[in-house]
Amino acid sequence: MPPDRARIHAVVNQKGGVAKTTTAVNLATALAATGRRTLVVDLDPQGNASTGLGIAADRRRMGAWDLMLARARLGDVAMGTDIAGFDLVPSTERLFGAEIELAGEPSRETRLRDALAGAAQRYDYVLIDCPPSLGFLTINALTAAARVLVPLQTEFLALEGLVLLKQTVEAVRAALNPRLSYAGILLTMSDRRNRLSVEVEADVRGHAEFGRFVYDTVIPRNVRVSEAPSHGKPVIVYDMKASGSQAYIRFAGEFLRREEGAP
Image 1: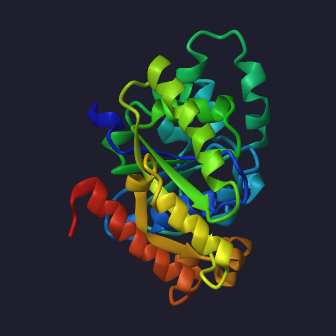
Image 2: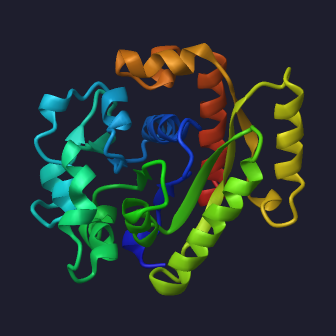
């Protein structure tokens, strides 16, 4: 794996409301707390990662759209956050039109990869927060990334969604990014008092193809996790003692053990 792409992760799920942005933001926060320089690229036109970090829309003069259209370099658009070592490339509403603006342009699927080519000189990890779809922006993220991180809500039809995502990953691997691999599947919004949630977790862990990728850590359904974005903070900062915060801290440790063999 080329060193400039070794630790670029696309955080992907085509379904909305599965804690994808929450996972990207809180994992980045925990990584930064360990001294890893971390960047989140908010590739969702809705800008939830940007809003959840307290970056108001009027502060987002440039962002991921400018990167993809080569109108700015990474150093021009990356913003510091309130968390030391954690930078953000914000989303702007212009991302809604990125696919149309790049229609017919050469190498349209590799625009983000090209824009992040020098990221390893500044960051240890780059997390791309993808929109809830498998469209043009997500294809760009999968083409740019080395690894795919999948937050998966423990709900009905979870495995069916994984199969569709797998097909997209395989298509990108075949046509654009042959070294793309899975970082893992993180079970989210779990309520072990709920029989369905427990059954879905068991099904995913026992799946012949996907089970080996599932992290041991499970993120519980927790009201503090839901509250934190409205205060412009990751839940780890908003309320470190909350069960969701503690779960994300454990997950970050497990993530690093997989990625680096860290103790």
